[in-house]
Image 1 (cartoon, rainbow, N blue to C red):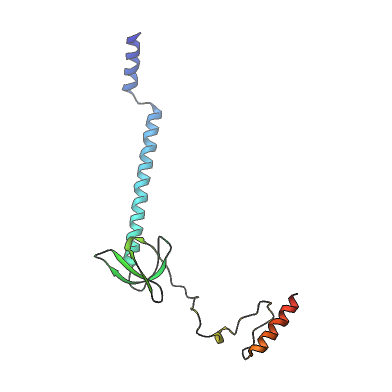
Image 2: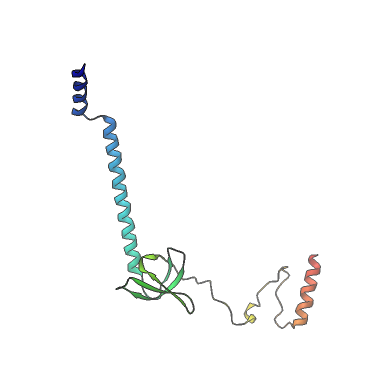
Amino acid sequence: MFSSILAAGETQAGGFDPMTLILFALFAVVILMMFRRQKKAKAAQQQQQAKLATGVSVMTNFGLFGTVLAIDDAENKVVLELSPGNTATVHRQTITKITAPDETHQGVPDDASSLTGFSGPTGHGEVPVNESPDETILRLNKDNNKDN
């Protein structure tokens, strides 16, 4: 009886089970795909870092949008201008995306005279340009009464 157990163990050790071969093949495929993905990510990051220059609009991995003011290669730091007069220093690797500047955003106007194309909340046309404050109050009250 003991010799039959040893004989069975020797036959198993001599040849590979087909399931073991499939398991090793799947393991090898998973490892190769991981290396391929890492290689692609590294290439994309190097391409991104090559595009990084002063004046470029960027996004960081924690959601800050800004424009690059300065790059310190020795310290791996980038100074970003988040809004006029507000800067932040971040690590170079936190920059995840170079964004295209937004052409539609023109900033806040200096005065309200540039807002003449505004249509009122009721949608009854444009706001008159040379309207006095008293006329504005009367017009708004009139529009409010029409809604009620």
